[in-house]
Image 1 (cartoon, rainbow over the protein chains, first blue to last red):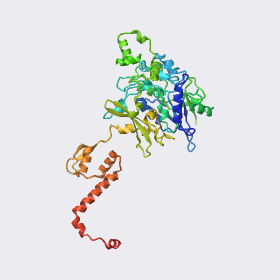
Image 2: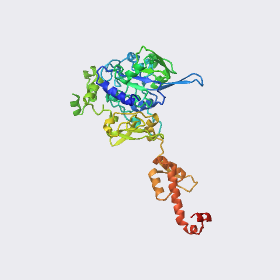
Image 3: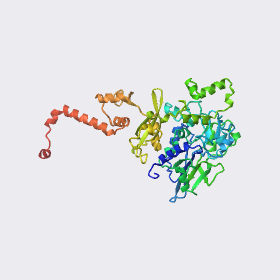
Image 4: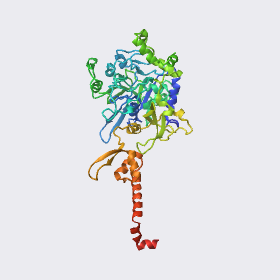
Amino acid sequence: MFEGRDELTVIQEDIKRALGNRKTRWAMLIDLRRCTACKSCTAGCVAEQKSPPGIMYRPVYEEETGKFPAVKRRFTPRPCQQCDDPPCVAACPNKGEGKATWKSTKGISAGIVMINYEQCIGCGQCVIACPYKARGLDGGAFHTEGTPQIQEYDTAPTWEYGRKWPREKNHLPVGVARKCHFCLHRLKNGMVPMCVSTCICRANYFGDPADSKSLIHRVIKENKGRVKVLTLVKGGGAPMKPADLKGKSPEEIAKRIGYPGSVPVFADAAKTKPRVFYILP
Amino acid sequence: MDDTKNDKGLNRRDFIKCTAVLGGALLASQVEWTSDLMRRAEAGTLTPEEEYELIKAENTLYTVCLQCNTGCGIKVKLFRKGDKAVALKIDGNAYNPFVAVPHAPYTTKPTELNTVDMAICPKGQGGVQTAYDPYRITKVLKRAGKRGENKWTTVPFDQAVNEIVNEKRNISPEMAIKLSRYFGTSAEVWLNLQNQYDLYRVKIKKSGILGRIKPRGLHKKAA
């Protein structure tokens, strides 16, 4: 609750106000003191975006430090950081606005690193370039594959980037790079991104931090000095060179780089200038 | 401009496809894909392909989650495909005080809350997977031979319920549990029904013997 109202209601009002402002640039703030690792955001995101098995736009990392009985646990949800200086876009051979991937700076999508599925060639360069392991290649699998019947909810469409994408074999976005886009299709309708709206702990804030009336602005201000950003996400895998990508399936690439990561590294600032901020416990 | 194209049954995507086939030079000038989309979204001139269909108020079902015993309010978002509908997403019901604090007034119209999603836990969201579980038991095994012969036929739930109601079969504890799963009731309800029916039958059938049984004195005094 914030001033007697549900945070989600306040955030939705912030988003509706920000949509009318041409200078809006979206950002997210995640309060790790509130996160309980229920993974509601992960489940909600997979259902909303129809991401195939193995692809997770927003995993939640669980870490344990200390020795019993002085044990501490920290849970870190990791959406795409929507960097202002994105290494994934720099690595793309078909980058540029309207092409495969670009950093949007205007319109409703301002602040988001966009992917145009129709232009992406699925080479995987961005997947290995992202320091947060936020990008993955869609292998085209279904969740109910190998069961008596592939269920209808599995083949239903997704509305990513404001377009209808039916989920069929060899139909886009199968075979191309996929990642979190702050639920652009929901923002467009004045809605809260899925991971934010489905958070039972209200650990997420969303909006335009430049808008002094917004909740995200106020919470960042209140917690000055505690707000950090991600610099790196470590995983079980090893870094890959672009030359190693040849002939590798999406699953093999994900396994090699340790997608979607497991150990986040925080700092006061990062080279990539992420637009997702964290309040550490 | 896009409107007129739509009226002729040719949307932007088809248009681009055609020009690509004809080798048109239009593809070279990559249309500002997203900004164009946003502009038309604001103007309300989106094609059906671009519309976000999960926010239609008429396709939203407000109900209560039974994935655990808490019973949070949920909204089930249906996706219509011809005359069939499939539940795609479960979200929190803004009318319900379990998921929204404070909750939306009950006088709020559903058309005002179609874009308001509240929080619901992953178990609640898994309701879609429970409902459409490919391994969900939807049929009943019926004994086809003598007891102990291990011969069975598969019958639909409706037929099983029918046969039981029409006194062809008794409700066994196993059947009671299956029925409770199917109807969402307790298993005891079904066993109690069978018990009551059995007692009633015995009372009628053995009324002669029952009349000859004299109750113990203790009861007589009390009465």
